[in-house]
Amino acid sequence: MLEIGMLFGGLAGIVVVLVVVLLRRGNSATENADGLLIEQARRIDVQEQRAKITGYAVNGFLPWDTDRPRRP
Image (cartoon, rainbow, N blue to C red; front, top):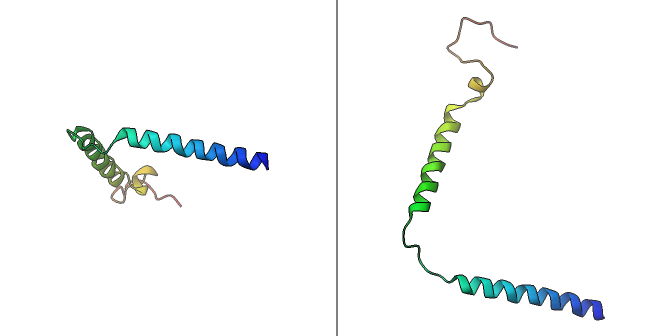
């Protein structure tokens, strides 16, 4: 019985610590959105890079490259 009490006491302590940490952070609005703009630009750049690197290009075969024989 003591072990169950210690388990629930430990869990309650963790919950209290998490609540205190979250309340200390507050709900303040971001003063500037520089970080968000940088993240958005990087995400768009990565999407464009993924679109350029297709399976054909990775495997060394491009559809318009007719000089080489096709791989099986």
